[in-house]
Length: 128
Image (cartoon, rainbow, N blue to C red; front, side):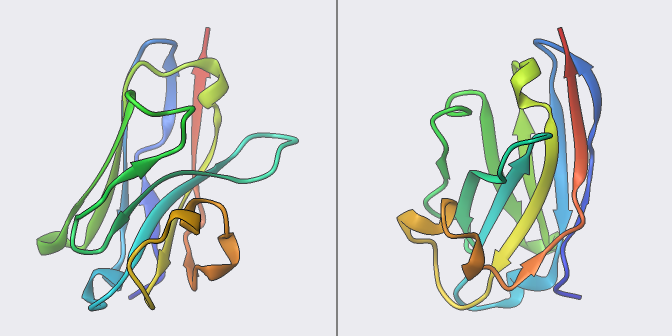
C-alpha cells in the first residue's frame, strides 16, 4: 500500500524528543522522494525534511536543522523523523508525503503539489 500511514505523535515538554514513523510501499519506486511536512493551527503547511528513497541526500528546513533527523529503512518500508530538543513552535500536525516519479529536488520542500501520496497526519504537541 503506497498510501503513507504515520504514527508516533504525542505530547511532550519542551526539550523532549519524539520519533515519527511513516509506513509506505513508496520505497518500491526506483526513483522517489519522501518527505515530512507539518501544519500548525492557522498556518500553512510547510516542508520539514526530505530524503531520496534510497536514503541519500537528506535535507531540512532551517527551522529544524540540527534538531531533526530524517531517515528510512527500506527493509521495513518505513520513513522516520527523529525530533530532538522540541520547542513549542514545533507543535503541529505532521504529514508524510511521497513522490514516486523522481529523486528529491531542492523545491521538494516547497512544492506540495508534486507529491502523489499523503498520509493522514500525526499530531505533535510541545508544551513549555
